Length: 556
Image (cartoon, rainbow, N blue to C red; front, side):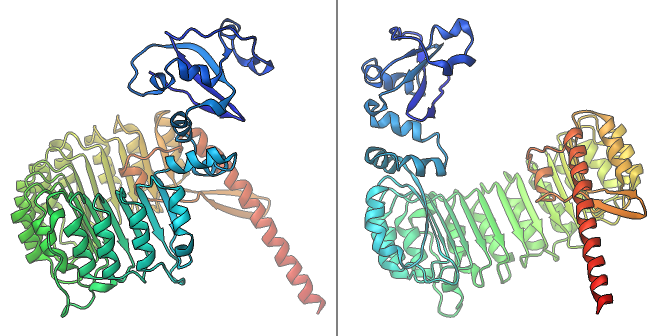
């Protein structure tokens, strides 16, 4: 079943089902010149009113299993199209097009408002006077984002309560820098919006009472994300965040930049169905909390620990979570091979492992060999500031037959010999990222001859790799996407120009997250040519400025 809705001025193009015989009402205008002659006779005008009479909602339904004809129906008289069908067409438009569409007429304004489910607003204090009319128009909103500039005065409790009365079917709410909200306003909001499933709070000032009101009233809450919540900074007068009714439905908890984040410990421990736990830059010793969490939450599937005070005791606690598949251990200098080994021996389903050793050398070949021995399902491995050698990488290649994505960053031991080992042993590898490692063109040549399944490689900040290495890689296979910031040097007259291909927006994201890349052989050569042209313009412009400056100085 295929659906094709395209709006051109006042026409709507719809594919007709086979069982609807279109009546002949004349030939198409000259705009059908691009339609093949054998199909041109099948293209007809049909009014929206007559389409509605022939079960238009039926063939617009995604559940329809009827065979679609090749014919097209061009519908003028769009004013007769039912509101539900018009709303369905609006769903295929982007935000800007929807705004312009709502200005066509009053009916379209009303239909567009009733069919909009996602809304993002500037949550400054002047939102309150216009909120009643705004949410009278957008009365079906289920996903709401309220963001305020840090230098502006945000909405207060009155505006939030009014919104909660108008949007009682709200399922997602994002609050950013709404510093005038208090515990009282959040409590009233939670009582009115009990269907809330996702709550994200950042840089707000309400405290534990407001958060407890949310978990006590929103029994369907599945995801909770809290960042820089100022109201819980005082540890002496702070009440803990209780499990509440949301404990049975919570699937993900994310805490970032919290001074007293351990007040959420009762909520985390009481969430028996929790699947994902993310802790970023939260102060305090988390070893005891993680032990309690892993003793009570057995189904944990994903854990992120970044810049957290946690040692081998907390890391080894994850051995109780035998369903753990994803672990990010970033900048936790107290974690060593001992904790990593204890975790790996029990978490045999581990698929993704990210380690940022912060160049402490407390996690090395010993820990990685134990990971290779116990985690055969490993598919993605990211090592930052860790110094592995051929000993551990060979074990990973031989034992982890599903390893497809590998990133090595800031490692002093990743040289040409290790790259050669990867090229020879890691036959299932599909994506490879190397950054700030002492590799050269010899390593690139080894990769060109090995890793038969490699489809993408990214090399960043490796001074020994030149354009020759990139050439070998691109010549090895046509479908290999190469992202390389190698320096290209071109001599023109007496001036040497150095042009560097601009780095990607994310050094690791495209490599390990499976993002698409346009860095093929043709596009990369085009970028290099454009870079050379822009480099010449910049250099010539700079030389002109210097010459004018020197001339001006001599004249004085």
